[in-house]
Amino acid sequence: MSLPVAVQRYLEKRALTHPWRIEGALRHDYRGAVVIPALAESAHLFATLASLQANPASVLEEFLVVVVVNQRQDAAASDKQDNDLTLRKLRESLGFLPHLGWVDAAADGLELPGKGGVGLARKIGLDLVLQRLDWAAGPILANLDADTLVRDDYLPALKAHFAIAEAGGAVVPFCHPVTGEKAQQQAMIAYELYLRGHVLGLQWAGSPYAFHTVGSTMVCRADDYVRSGGMNRRQAGEDFYFLQQLAKTSGVGGVVDTVVYPSARISQRTPFGTGRSVAQLASDGSAPRLYYDPRCYEMLHDWLQLVSAHWQTDGGEILEQAGVISELLAGFLRKENFQETWPRLCRNHADRQSRLKAFHGWFDGLKTTRLIHYLTDAGWPRQAAAEAIAPLLRRVGLPAVDEPQKQLMLLRQRQIGTPCASCRLSEKSNCCRVA
Image (cartoon, rainbow, N blue to C red; front, side, top):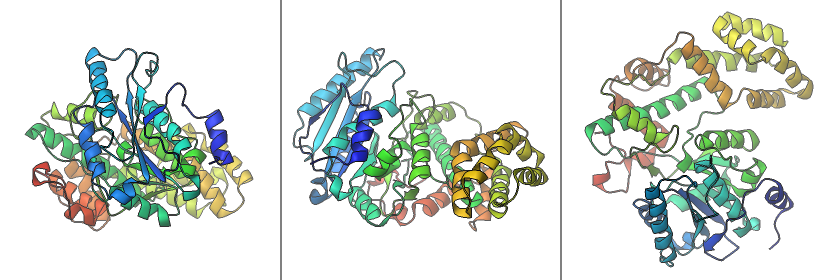
């Protein structure tokens, strides 16, 4: 089957496939693929694969599952040994999943380059599967992590979502099992509350980038993956930048009726992320001051409303009105060269819809984060959960409780919905429960 022209062009100019290849599965007509990077994950990967295997057999027939076993040349000897074990198990596991493939990015000559990390491993897998898809069927690409469990309705939920969704990208609801020692449990509660509180603040402010950026929740249509320019190669933060690009090119929605369960285990593998954040919090017995001052979201809200209402207004006047909101906001906008950017947007985009879309392409998720960090550094420091989260809960009509455990449960129920109350994992997992 011939590939669409856009896919051929992507593979020629932007894909990263050589010298790697997919072993195992042989077909070239899949309606979707799940890509799982794995670095020293032999203890967790096969539980993740087993959770995928619990999905309906008819749907599993349509999906290719690819594990990218990867390491850099400077990897620790223990990681190399673990990867060898993983590859051996995969090569002995034909029949474990009906269509299981793997990529050896760990053998001599196949390792990732010096700065390669999870983003590069994801990209290798995603780019390789493009030639294994049935492009007439509107194929789907899903990202998981090797230590993330899924429910038995995971693949059907992805199919159902993209059968009707307008946006080309989406995120799957997630829930970290709260397990381990008490310090680790409290750290996981604090970190997930930070993630959920931040998205709640962005939603209230009206940001089009109000979605979670967790790597194991990212899904998209394959043609929108190509349209976005593909996965980036970052060692960390690849999820943030990939979803931001999807939001700009095809939009990011939310999958319903399923949940994924990323591990909350402690790890120092990436410069930031769940494992490192939990490790830092678990080592500090004091109440964490993770959470942005709610005034940051109020200012973001007022700024986005200002631009929306004055889209035909001269940039100098908008900047003056921003100063009325706060001199901090005006100072940030001058620092980001708004006064030079706005006239260009106006010249190139005459109508309201296209101009505001272009504005949000400029004032994107990264610039939103920069604004919040600018305000934080300028005198609105991070706060404890009782100070920061309760006002946000009140603004969206939820009880303004002070305890982090209760705050997290409220936000899980709001952001996950019905599946949170119907978890199908065992009682021992403590899934969707806060100890």
